[in-house]
Image: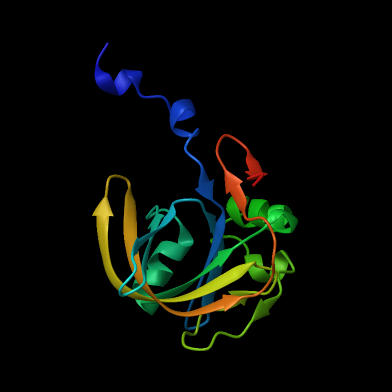
Length: 163
C-alpha cells in the first residue's frame, strides 16, 4: 500500500475550518458559495487566502472581478450555508432563490451577506493553482463586524465551538 492509499478524506475532515460564504459579482453575473478553506496569511497587509475549485461558478467571477467578499457565518446561518454549498450558480441565482439578503459594500462591487457575523471586503492580489484548487489571496480592504455570535465551523459535520 502506498502513502496515497493511506490518506483518508475522513481523516482530513477532522481538521476544523470556519464556514464562510464567498460572494462575487462581475458585471451582471454574481454568486454566493460556501467555502471552508479560508485562512489569514498576513497581518501587514491584512491578507486572506480562499481555496476554490475551478469547477465552481464563482472561480471565474473572482478572476474577472479581481475582488470578493467573505462572510463569516454563525449558527443561525446554517441553512443558508447549506443552500449556498449545495446549489450551483450554473443553474440558479443563489442570492435570489435562497432569499439571501445582502448589504452594499463600501470599497468593492460584490454584495455582502446581511446575516453574517462579519463581512470582509477583499481585493485580489494574487492567485495560483495548487493541486485541484486555486488559491486566491485577497487584501482585506474593509471589515464589517455585524453581529455577536458563535461562528459556524465544519469538521465532519457543521457545528460551533463551545468556548
